[in-house]
Structure formats: structure tokens, C-alpha cells
Image 1 (cartoon, rainbow, N blue to C red):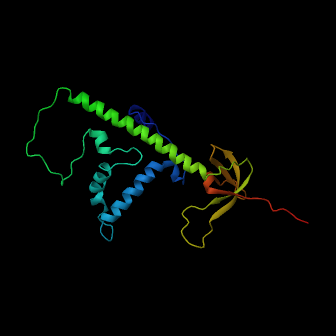
Image 2: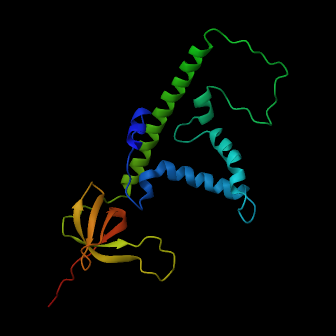
Image 3: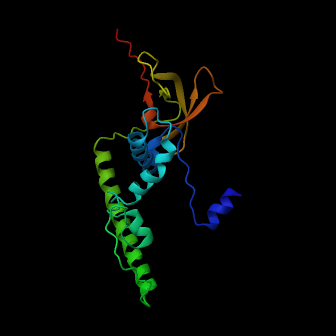
Length: 204
């Protein structure tokens, strides 16, 4: 049912690896920005956070976004947003130019095209910076690894668990690992969550 709905509205449903927020970078960035603004506006006990949502959302939608270099409000409505602090015109005209709709669609389309170009440019720059510091290790089936523990908060907690072995390669950076002592325990992980185990050399 959900797949049919997504298909009808033209949405492509993409899956992400668990415990890997980098896969949903755009969503995580939005959540981080929204959380910070809600925290700044809420009371000390944060009990009125839901009352701040309209103000935070409006602020987000009328601010220029660095990836698109555009204002979301203007991209949707084709005009600059008005805030309560803006000076309002005393004369309100209900007349509309015959070609208003056509020009409005053209303007919104131009904003959309420009935003897409800016997004691609930003993504290329981000990838270039990422690749400079990324080693991209490759693991073979049977390689022994340790897996980073999730929700590690205490200072002296174990940081990695295992040993696991590489059981399946799903993608360039995604693997299925299987616990050596507990064969029924398997996990889907990405390369930034594992470290290799090397055999100790016997030096005589």
C-alpha cells in the first residue's frame, strides 16, 4: 500500500544503512538546525517545545539555504516572504496581470533550476573534501573485524565488540558481519563502524 502511494505521488523510496546518519545527511542537517533553534526558544525545562515549532519552521523557510542559495518560501510561492515587522502597503490591489500565472511558473522554474545547479556544485565540493581524508578500505569475506558499539555514553564502556567476520558485501561501504562465537548474531554495518583485526606475528 505504501509503495503504491509513493509511486502515485512520484516519490522514490531509498533505504539507508542502520546507525549511519551520514546516509541521510540532508535530513540530519535539518534536524540539527531545528533542534538548536527549538532549544534556544523553549523554556528552561523544554516543556513548551511544540509551541515554538511554527516560529522555527517559518524562520527556516524564509532563510537562504547554503546548498541551494535560495529561500524555500520564494521557491514555492514565487515571491519574497513577508514578516510581521515588514512595512505593509496601505493600498491593496486585487488586480492580476493576464500573464501572471505564466510568469510566476517561469520564475519558480528558474529558481528550481538554479537551486539544482547549486546543490550539484555543493555536493561535488563536499565529495572532494571527503575524499581527501577517506581511505576507503576494502574487506574480503572471512576477514576478522571489531564493530563499534552503539549508544556508547560512559567513559570506560567497551568501544568495540566482537570478533566478527565479514559474511557478505552489500555495497562498496556496506557489509554483513557475523559474530565468531555467536553465529546467529549478524549485523549490517558500514566501514566507518568497523576496525580490522590483524594476526599477531610470531617473531622467533
